[in-house]
Picture 1: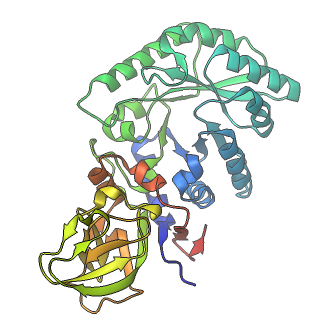
Picture 2 (picture 1 turned 180 degrees about the horizontal axis):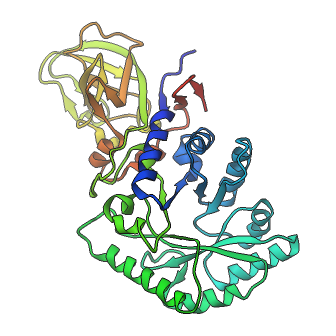
Picture 3 (picture 1 turned 60 degrees about the vertical axis):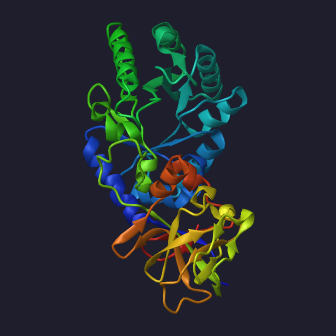
Length: 383
């Protein structure tokens, strides 16, 4: 049977976005963040597409994601691709990660000692990046304590101190001075370390927002940037869209039923919409279980028959009602573009995020399990 609701993932657009980002930040390297199964979209297709256009560094959040990605990348035949955990590792997770060559974060001296012990036991050298808390207040070595900790870690055996990184708390807001303060704190730490003869091959503080809004984070002393949401062609609504990226995603469903309803009819739970005139109403086969935010209730639009159609009433779990009065010949089974391109028009995850008062990650990660992931850019295959 044809699936009712599908998210289509344009791998050609994904690859073009990566190339644009890489060219913008060159000679800095680009680390592609594919945590949470590439935000629920399918890490295998993403990783293989990105490797094919030159990506050699990937970031994930936890060991299970790292193991899966190591296996996927092994199928590509490339030997120089790294997988890095960007958050933290727990004691029992360290040895399996060292065994498969995953680059690990050092968030304190204790974690480094455990990494060193595991590497010594396995007869390996573990690559690590120091995770610095320059103001995020979440994980890592506080910048004020970092010199002492890093010097102690460098005395440990079987550890290659390849990199050092931090994360910005406010990089989506160009008017907030805090990002510049974080950059200054991090640069001062690098200078203090340099005066002690300590340097790193990979130095990074920028994620997608900083790449767009603070271009200095891709210049010396920084040698790497991280990108996640920009790969999908999405941006935080508060920042600058410095990169001309394409939306990679389209969410498509089908019309379930079309009816003519009289004026005065109320629509959906809570009766939040009352028809002011006789209206042709289509019910589409997608609701909040499929990722349509409740915030689109009485506000959002979808495309049917090449036209924008207003959402009527409260979005329910499985269905959404829309006004198709101006769409000729619409019938059950017709395609509905919830977000994506339609001729010269488009609705994007960013548009939904703005209505919901959130960001695109929230929208993308909310696409339900029953939404079939399909990659395009060649032969279409479900992920």
